[in-house]
Length: 192
Image (tube, rainbow, N blue to C red; front, side):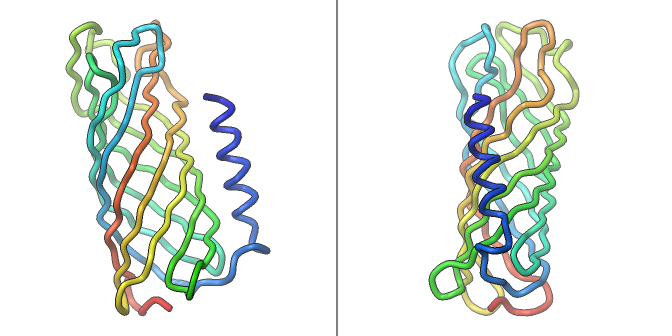
């Protein structure tokens, strides 16, 4: 798993270089996001993975070749026998490249994510000893296309590398892959 994280970070850093990205119109944007999550606890308590959901809101700012976002998300993590729900606040930064006719954007990003446990149900582990907060390192990519003057729709794929264990004594940590759809609009001026 460390190799995947290093590879994604390397690609994000290389593609975030301003020399490869054509400029985009600066501005602010907001989007509703939601989709599926595939997660496991990555420890010897291997009861299989879990499919869950995620939903939230994203706010961002575009610069010429980059984009910074702040999100508020509800997300389901854990594994088949231990269900953990969180409210997450990821902050990401990434390089943006305009594709096709300038209406489609590709973005590779990384950042930090702080999560707060909101519920826990488990058949095999004690929820009282689960950590209340978690810290993650999101690595992902997005593709979005402008529809009309101020709206866009896109896809987002993200892996969040765990920086804090959920259960310290078991070496259990959430390892979620997120597959999300974004529907949003620019705030203020129209996209180009």
